[in-house]
Picture (cartoon, rainbow, N blue to C red):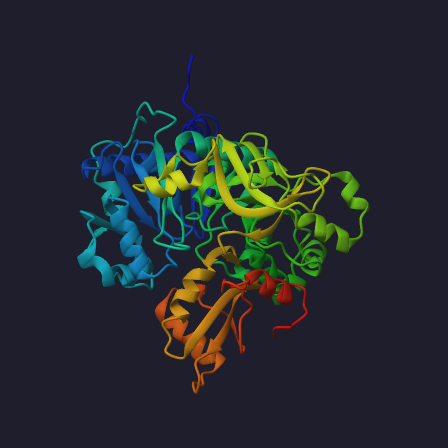
Length: 529
């Protein structure tokens, strides 16, 4: 007998066995699993009444609130497709994504309606539903969310017969070298990724999970599903504020969270950390740039954080590797442990196969030296890019998805990234394209040549550094360049540092040699202050 693999079924299980247990805590509001189930069913009924049918798309622009959780279940259990939106991107990218995704309806937080107001006339959505937020004025016309879900014909909703291979979400990349791409994720890929989340992070019924990681980031890495599966507690966090997080550590006895190293940095540098008295030692999964050894030590000493390094990308739901910690590693020095924790690690149990291959397709030697590209295949890989056959075909070759990340394999089988073929900078958990910044810089009248690379940063893990050759007789300052970039792109993508040089390293044919710049700065041969 075949039973489709869908994370939606975990809501049914949670309501069946834990109806009176607290499911969601969102500031002063608390919902049991029975209450959470009723609200998601109401949302499904309201969407049906609004003309949203199976297979149609609903865009959602919300922070980490109970409304966002409700959307994941309320939209997807009816066979509709959710399009989670990154509310940090520019209004131009937002307009492109909403229209490209063919979303018929948009659900948006009142705090984000200013950006929607700018592009409303150009959007193809038929209706907008607004979540009212105290202190924020709604800048667009729309239906109030609570009114939307209350005026339904029936409170209960029976999920349709879902095909595990049908779309669950379309998650857009941040537009690295071109327009943002819509990654098509299925019910099956989300189910298997969430299974990895549960297994490798040791998720259990007693867990109290803090949503520090934006839920729009590849569906909260699977946390939106995994916590419900075991009947754990979702603790919502509208905004990442270190003091609030530490308060929640104490008040709610948080046991698990996910995020970028920047979150750890914020916590250990928050004055309240010296006063905190927590009874549990939270587990924390991190991805992106690994934290410095000193930061890891501080996190362990001050908060008792048990840090697990994971690796993946939007196209893989996202998990494909994790840094499995062996008892043998405990015998290493703190500095050596930090090096070990920086490795991306080994395959997760349920995702499929991942390896590093050379240009001829053969796996590289397990010597920690031979460089190759990380490729993967299996249960968590995307269905493809939405309405983009060319990019889909380019990503899949010889039966494998090509990540574009260059890595080595150590003798123990652990994979470690050494470079990023796609020139992506991971800063504070956000993907930033160096080529996108360069495109903006080259529009500046004073810039002759420009190269952007990632450089180490204690706070963000790594940040964009713009290295610029100015045209003759032009004079601009670092602040001028940064301001110019911030005026022409999303603020978080703009370079944090700028250096002016007389020339950039190139090959005999004139090709820029970025690896020489990276070596210079990452090896501290030249300091950036």
